[in-house]
Length: 306
Image (cartoon, rainbow, N blue to C red; front, side):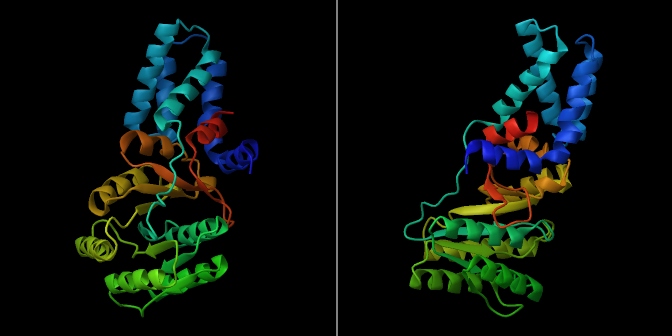
């Protein structure tokens, strides 16, 4: 898929965010006669409402002030392009690819609270990796809910990949151990391990996640190669708070941000990048199997502002 085709899909996926965020900026710029303190205050409010976050919004506005002064900008119409530059600066230029360096097996552990689209993301990721020619196995490590095991099996069938499972209530670390053995025996390229939808306040569940990691590391030094935290974009700044807590407890290496197409809070991508030292690696922009994409900062900025 070419850049402009992907951009079109992403623009459609960001429709609600564009209306909440960019259209308000465009209206502000269009009806502003001069760049003054009232303009900057109103812009900051729009950014905060678009879930860019208070700190990041203030930082963006301060940088914009500096650019206005440095470039001697007097026409408000020029500010949209400058703001786009500043957003791209925060997001960076590079696409963060998944770490598939594990030899011969790459192991991903997927974490996140219930209801964020974790199992769906795992299924779509399995489909994506299989389409790239990799042999993928899933592990049903969320043993607290029978429904979670069943749901993962359904997604495994859709993606055409094997699922390693135990009964409800089994030790998730034992599931992880068996999954690693099965992945080795079947010469898989990638093993994706689901985990319980932990509320970050449940200390015992966090300890269990650490146990799962220890089992994996003992079997394959250097693994897991990714710990992906699934966040729901519709929760806005709450997603940032979840990321902070999970990042500390689970050693998160990347974020999969779901439901971007269903929210006006897509500005949270900017906030996550600015406030956390964890890259957004995957974004969900629809319900189809193909709608999980590698996050591309350049594409995102273009889709948001064009």
